[in-house]
Image (cartoon, rainbow, N blue to C red; front, side):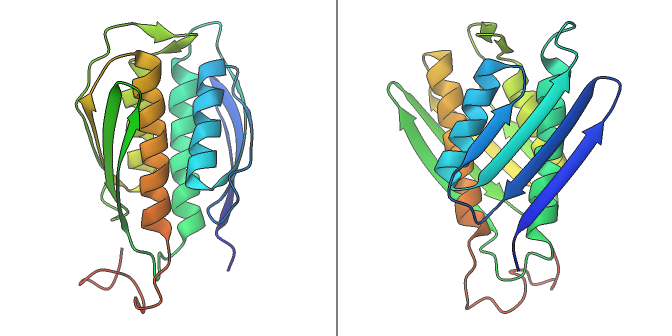
Amino acid sequence: MERKANINRKTKETDISLELNIDGKGESNISSGVGFLDHMLESFARHGLFDLDVKCEGDLIVDCHHTIEDIGIVLGQAIKKALGDKKQIVRFGSTIIPMDESLVLVSLDLSNRPYLTFDYKFDVERVGYFDTEMVKEFFYAISYSAGMNLHIKVLEGGNAHHVIEAIFKAFAKSLDYATLKDPRIIDVLSTKGDL
């Protein structure tokens, strides 16, 4: 079974089409209208070895909030849909990623129980046209629409670009590990028998 999802979502604020292949090669085609977000999503795809296409037309005349948050919602929906019944997946993934002076830990559980812990406050308001407060909003949207328990801890901060990029890379690697299939797992990795 191919683990792919294609999601379209249109509101008065955004019009998004997103295609995700969990078992990809790290190829991406991203057009969100927010250059730094495009860079982060390309990094996510490359380091998680996911194929990801995103096209978004958002109300950037207002600000970047709706575009970033709504792409998070749709990406979370795509992750959930692509994983289907979650049979044989490892379920948990944790990674610590350095980027120059910054060091980030991301740990997640594809438990179908949404929760986000995010413990970092940025010293600057934006990177390019990307508001730094939107990092938390983006991952909150993913965690809730994917049904994912997600912990993001910045162990060493510094340059905001480096911190955010390390978060996206660590999230990508953690999700890659969590979605791996283990032939020893017969159905789902849960004593409940369901995720």
